Structure formats: structure tokens, C-alpha cells
Length: 102
Image (cartoon, rainbow, N blue to C red; front, side, top):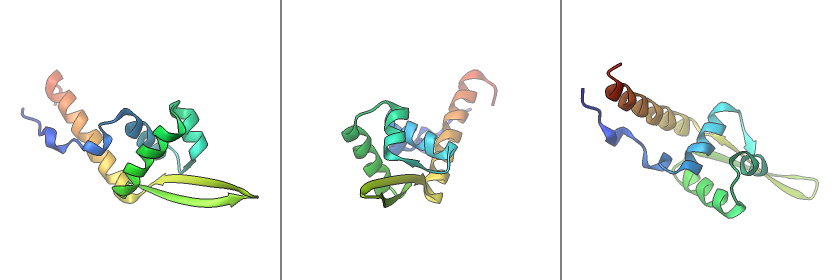
């Protein structure tokens, strides 16, 4: 059985982006600090990967203020959920093809 690796989405090849999308798919939304803590990455690293996912329209950004402090929350967009699910499905197909369970 042949598997089309072109179904894997380049946007999710990076472990930080994969972690971001996994966290956002599992939960409704997360703020920047919670994502940073969960993934154990620096501010700059997280910000650059969130920006890349935002550029693809895979995440929705909501900026508010809590008192005088800015609070940025992220959630997976419908497009992002669909693209991430397709990526996971392609990975599963590849694994099944290798294990003969497909």
C-alpha cells in the first residue's frame, strides 16, 4: 500500500507547532503564558511559531486587557482543526502502511 506523504502538512512539521495545535485542539483556548508553560519554550520561540500558524489561518488570536495587563488568547480555527486532523490522518495512514495494519 502506497501512502502519499504530500498529505503531511509542512506547517505542522515543527515540534512546537505540533504541540501548539495539539494543545489547542484538546482545549477550547489557551493564553500565551499557559502555552509557554505547557510547551516549555521561550517567549520568542512561541511567538514566532504562533505567528506562522496565524499566517496560515490555523489559529485565532484574541487580545484583551485584564486590568492594565494585556492578555492574548489563542484557539484553533475551523481551518486549523481541519488541516491538523488531515495531518494526523496522514500520519496514521503512514504508520498503518508500515505496520501492515491498514
